[in-house]
Image 1 (cartoon, rainbow, N blue to C red):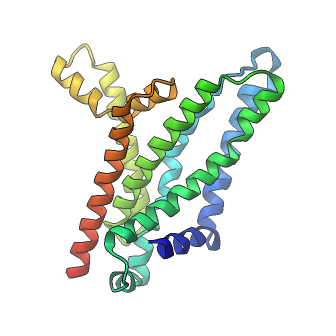
Image 2: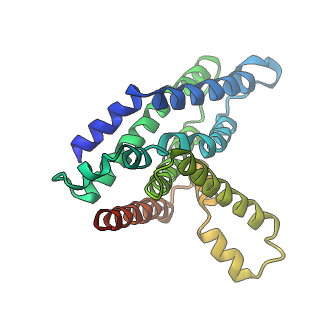
Length: 240
């Protein structure tokens, strides 16, 4: 697993993907931070809740860039057969690739520490809000990456993998909006069920500092389910 992790982590920086992902993210988010929290003195805010909410939206569009090549590229280059015959178990292979992508995401979060540092120079950070938002972003980021890896394992076309992941993320977001707008029209059991599986609702709770064990278990379960499904897809492909 460690060898797969190192191989894939290096691959992000030997191809343009890692630089496009990190550069695009930081450029857009730093511009938003500057305009919202720094530039306008009259409306300057010490709260980072706005930029984290914006970051969540950007994640839907940029996470597919991070995950689209993970297995699709292996299929296209026919290197998947080498992986299948290596001494690494399929579960270790999937976990190595997942951790490599997650590490790139953590690099992004390290770069984003500029925001609370800048706020500390002009005011005072709400540390509960900052920690809650970082925990929320980490949990939903891990879930997105696991979903993206699964989609990538289904096709050798990177564009299809990216569009499929984007469609899944946007679909989950639209389902959340639909639930919020139709809450009064739906039966009570339906609203309860939709809120139970709501990614964004649980993220909102964590970002506000409401740290409940079931929320973390929920996001870990999403990661586990999609990584498990990825292993099943690879097993089917290996023996087909």
